[in-house]
Length: 232
Image (cartoon, rainbow, N blue to C red; front, side, top):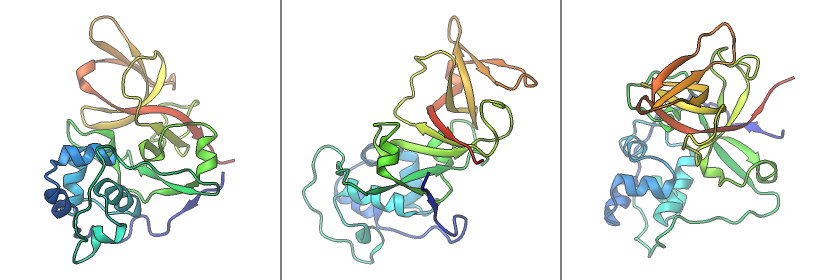
């Protein structure tokens, strides 16, 4: 599959940065910067306050959204503000280009209301862009990857399968598809089935695990699982 892990995925500390200052110069709220970066305002706050690791992927995404170079995000003196387009910066897909895909750690404990994107703790993984384009046209910064957690989706998914998540698909408009969800603050990879009223059946493919119903409001859908990879 041609992927290479960054070393030291768990090493290092979150570091101070210029994201908040650059955002303030532009008069943007955290949700506005989050929209331009393809993430949430809560995630921006964590990055600004050094509560979340500032990986190279986050640096690149913040730099593109703010219209500065990646070095300006962590430099002591940020570059002067430049005129910015109204829309997020689009990048060309040159031959041989590689992209970093954000990696989630769905085993982390979170409180109620946590979104799937708040589980970003791992170093991103770099993939060949041609490989990614072979199965999806979704912009790479809107893709997520995660390891399957537990055995609730066995035999469809094993616990160590690498799961690809399309974060642009968050509407429960397809029955019996597999989704990355946060259910009352607990992240999971589950099959979802809409029922009558505002109820949803949370389905585990493992016959040993009982399915259960929840209110739609209890679900925060982070994206649809579009692919998985399994080690031989």
